[in-house]
Image 1 (tube, one colour):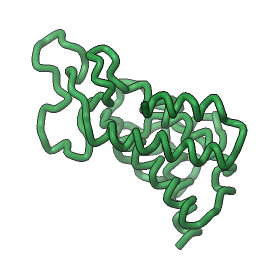
Image 2 (cartoon, rainbow, N blue to C red):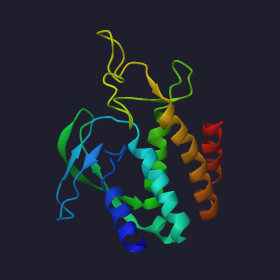
Image 3 (cartoon, rainbow, N blue to C red):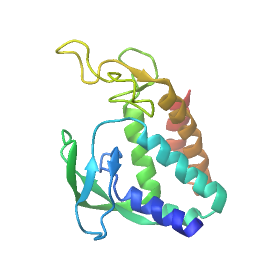
Length: 184
């Protein structure tokens, strides 16, 4: 159902924070101007699923016009957990949403401990392993020092997916290089 899939993708992208961080969970209100009920716990894996979903949609439908669709963002305080996120006045294309999501994901790569992996934050799809992202000692950095191999491999895949999308669209050579460097 390509049209239904397209609508769901756009509805979900309207619930991305202006920073490019997707919420953990959200409810799409019937009123498109209403605040969006969200869970903003900092789980790392939502963005990787979004990039792969749009890539799969493009592969199956060939409908690259979705990348030009304009949609908005949401805004909420960084320390919010369960909240009603305000609609941002900022809007741009689906493609720009994907680029922001990639920016957020790449900003979570661990450079401090030189693992090159994505920081797990609160968790990933396997977040039933309690305590992954919880600091062990008081005063330790937020979420501890853990990383996630699963989300790292997905981000690696996302780099290649985005390079393929951007190459098809054209005009994004510098960003393609950034993603290729990140994948390396």
